[in-house]
Length: 350
Image (cartoon, rainbow, N blue to C red; front, side):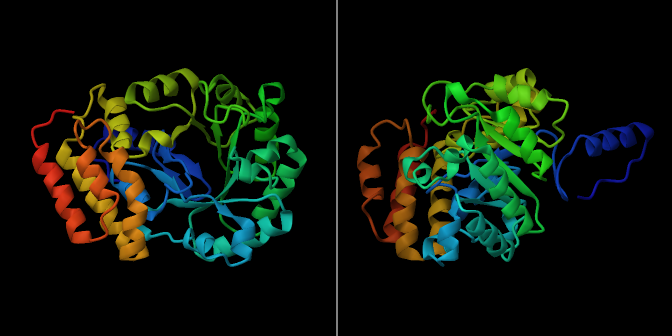
C-alpha cells in the first residue's frame, strides 16, 4: 500500500495514525474496520464477488469448498477455486472433518495463490454437519485444533477461521475455541453470533463476540457476523461490541451497495442515496455479463436467474418482467428486458 508523502507534521501524524490502525492478517493489510463479504454457498461466486468489490467490500471469500471434493478432483469444487486479481485480497474457504483431507486440500488451494485460506467451522446445514464438518466440529474442539493444524502445515498462506458460538445454548465454547485456535497460529477469527442449533433463527448474540474480543489473551483480529443489514446497525455494533471489523452475508445478496453505504455513514453520519432503478439494472446486467464470461453463456444465464428477485425486490408490478428474466435463454432478449425495466421504472423512487 502506497501512502502520499506528508507535507506537514499534522499530515504526517494523520498518516501514521492510519498506518497504526490498519488491520493485518499475516502480510495482508486491511483498512481500519474492514467490511468482509461472507462466504455463501451458491452466492459468493466470482461475478457476485466482483460486484461487492466494486461497491466497497474490503476482503472476500469464496463459496465453501469440500476438502474431499478437491481431492477427488470434483469439477464443482475445482471451479470454486477460480479467483481473479481484481478481487484481492481474497480468501478461499474449505471445510471437512478429516485431517488428511484437510491437509491435502490446503496444499491444492495454495497452488492457486489466494491471499488467505479460511476454514469453515460454522456451516449449520444438515448435509455438512452429518459428515462431521462445518459446525459439527464445535462439538469436538480437539478435532478442530487437529484439522486446523493440518491446514496450517499444508500452506504458507495465512489461515483464518469462521465459526459460531457453539453447538447449542448449553455448549457455547467460543472462548476456548478462540484461544486454542490463536495458540496454533490462526491469524483471524470471524464469529457468527448464533449457535448451530439456532441455524439463522432468532437474533445473533454479539455479547459473546465482544467477550472474545475483550479477552486480553486474544491478539488476532476478531470479526463479527450476524444480522448487520444497515449502516446504523453497523455503526452501533462497531461501537457497542468493539470488534475489528464486520462480515456481511445475507444483507449483501441483491444489495452490494451496502458496503459503501456503511463506509459513508461511518465517515460522515449521512446516508448515501439509495440505488436507483438504473443502478439495479446495471448491477443485474453486469452480473449476467460476468457470469457468462466465467461459466459460458448457458450456465451463466441459468446461474444468474436466482439473483433477479433480489435485485428487484420491492419493485411494484414487476412479476411479468421477472418471470421472463428467469425463463429466457437468449442473452440479447435478457438485456432487452433489463433495459425495458430501467425505462419502465425510470422515475420510481425506491
